[in-house]
Length: 257
Ligand SMILES: [Zn+2]
Ligand SMILES: [Zn+2]
Image (spheres, rainbow, N blue to C red):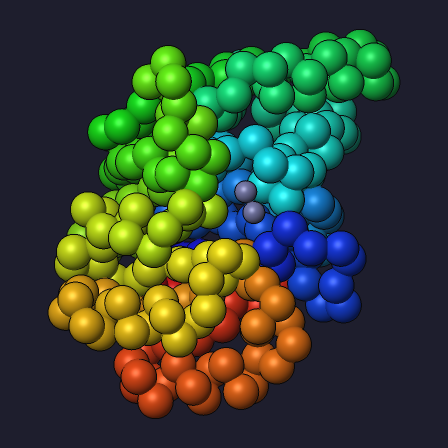
């Protein structure tokens, strides 16, 4: 399994070298997209990835730093299909809890070239706790978190994901209301991709250390003011707590897991 990082910034104003959050897991030649911040498909394409290999897209919640590049991603897939015809008959599932966001994006696309008529289908699916995807040897489990508060109607709108394939596991925090929102997902995980937009990196490290969480590698993503200000300092501080198993994810990079 590979992970390609397209954007590693939290929802800040534009930052040099970091765009809003997005990454993809590559398994068996297919891409599984997680969050779609600004410019994600632009970065992926320039990294040499084939956007027409996108099988499914998983959106943690509807804040702009997580959906700002979604319309453009779908537009770019259609654009490449008009050049190659490789998408005919295929389907892309988009997991997105917020139906209004989805309707807005589809409305915007419908006013673009060719009325956004496609040779492939796009299916929006809601998200609830539990396994939401299990195909081609890749499984995705969702768990709600409190980033957008506790809903009156029981309909959670913000999720974290656990991805499993080839005997490996990756947990993506999405945005959290509290660090321990992620607790039920992270026992025995090979890689935790943890947001630092709402928490100090050292608080995350101390949480993992003090609760004896079996997290083999910790990557900081959705990076907030602390890391944006001084990444080298924050990384060395984190390594004092957890050792060399910590890293800061960078835009345009790929790692093997
Ligand atoms: Zn965010
Ligand atoms: Zn958010």
